[in-house]
Image (cartoon, protein in one colour):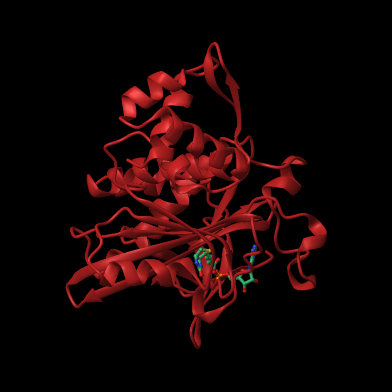
Length: 327
Ligand code: BT5
């Protein structure tokens, strides 16, 4: 554990109360001057920490910054998702950073956040707009060795269930659009990009990239997204703390990933279906050059979408873009 993480853990454990410099320094085995100097650095980052000569240090407020040690100090352990956390001010794409870690044999569960991405991406080479400090742009490394490559879509379903739960804790009712969107009032709030490296019969690793629009205002969206996208700030009419939301999402991911690895995909799938705006609708799904039209009936056991075509065949669709048809 780093010093910042230990200090923040001690301050949080004291709750409304204070913790003395002597106690922290004794607990961490460093001098009181070293504790003081770390407290000064945390203050510079925006942490409001009261220092009283009598009672000690008290944490008054936390800024809207993503600080790896702070996020780590808020997560219970042992855990997989968020076992380790890295935060970049700017990167090309957090999926690329995690890909490098994966190739270096880093264990699963590491999470990489960036305040902004210069080349944030969606599926099929589409762009993902990731302006500085306006959202959560992050990726998680997973090594789900018990899943076959064809079941990788289950991970997108797992992530969508977790994201929906965390967002609804903020008091909203998000809907899931197959395969990877979280919508509020029909507008996209969040997207998931699942990338995997596999051999024919074995997944080597999976990178789940998640983008959530947190504090964007309407005018900060480009023309083409004005009607199609929304943020938590727009929906709740107040700014939302990114670190708090990040912790909520990582906790939900931990729970749903554990459920998936325990063989409980069917439970995740039924929760997914309850909150899905695609099931029961007439849809056209474009998969590359092809498209399949019909009624979206259910989620397949591999995470695919089961579409009943006009001819009555049940088609299993993996990947692709769904367009809801007016009936
Ligand atoms: C997605 O793709 O929805 C997956 C987005 C994943 C983004 C995360 S951020 C962290 C990690 N690192 C990355 O580089 N990516 C992941 P797709 O279904 O293809 O949707 C892309 C479309 O969403 C674009 O073509 C736009 O229409 C729209 N879009 C782009 N930026 C948006 C934003 N910030 N909010 C809402 N919609 C957006």
